[in-house]
Amino acid sequence: MPQAYAYTAFGGPEVETFLDLPKPSPGPGQVLIKVRAAGVNPVDWKKRTGYRPQGAPAPALPAVFGGEAAGVVELIGPGVTGIAVGDEVFGQTVAGAWAEWALLPAELTARRPPSVSFEDAATLPIAAATAHDALVQLALPAGATLLIIGVGGGVGVAAAQIARIQGLTVIGTASAGKKDFVESLDVVPVEYGEGVADRVRAAAPQGVDGILDLVGGHALEEEVAGLLSDRTKLVSAADRETVARLGGAPVARLRTRAVLDQVAAWVADGLLNPRVVEVFPLPEAAQALHRVEGGHARGKVVLTNPA
Ligand SMILES: NC(=O)c1ccc[n+]([C@@H]2O[C@H](COP(=O)([O-])OP(=O)(O)OC[C@H]3O[C@@H](n4cnc5c(N)ncnc54)[C@H](OP(=O)(O)O)[C@@H]3O)[C@@H](O)[C@H]2O)c1
Image (tube, rainbow, N blue to C red; front, side, top):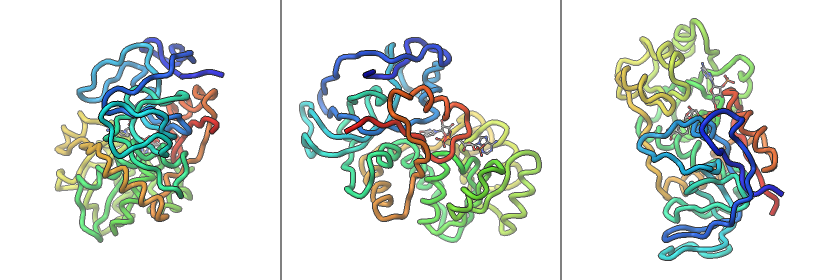
């Protein structure tokens, strides 16, 4: 049975492999969990190619994939309070989640509400928390209209639902094949591609008060042009350079346990569904990553381990 899915160098899928690594032991402020589920995100394949999120040091190689996990606490490191062995938790990982065990910083570890599945909980630290943080940053009043560029993926699905909780009207760009999926989120779908800005104008004759971009590049430039005069209401999780050039800002991540508790509470209350649409057992990690690397995932992709 493979233990951990890792990349041994920076490059394409050819540098991915399963490794038999020793069980990690928690350092100060860390907890060790037996992983039940782990999220799959674009940042996983981006890091494999050598991309480093702002300010992040280069990972030591081989590096285990995965930045978020849910599972059961097996050991706690020195100085950890408020979390006990046996607790069912989820959080951001220290270095890798696609494995039997993962280390989590205690301050970014939250308790899993009993009604929230391990699969759903595992998706919250990256996609849902980013969506939460973006909406905090935009600070739009109830009744305002938000455009989400790339609403059909992991962050977009969460952002759309959180925006609806806040009383916003949501318009989202997606491919034609996701129309029904987008409508099921209570979002007005707009097909992306040539002429998209005109289609957004037609869908939102009242105008757009904020934009959350989850695609970047051409999609961001085309869709933002002429739609938003107040560029302080433009944020992107996908493209720091383009959004800054357009007068907006990258999404500022809060990364707190309070945010994890909040998004989990929304899931428990039935207000937020991360839409886990594809679940792969850990031995199929390559297929799961390939699915996300294709750039057209629908909702969330998750890896699981047996209990
Ligand atoms: N800064 C952070 O902390 C942070 C955190 C999370 C994510 N991110 C970044 O945010 C981005 C989105 O992440 P994600 O997890 O939502 O990705 P994802 O689940 O892979 O979804 C990407 C979505 O983009 C859509 N898309 C592709 N081309 C498009 C276009 N031209 N116009 C509109 N939609 C388009 C795809 O839908 P179709 O099938 O409809 O094409 C797909 O649903 C990624 O770049 C990721 O790295 C950043």
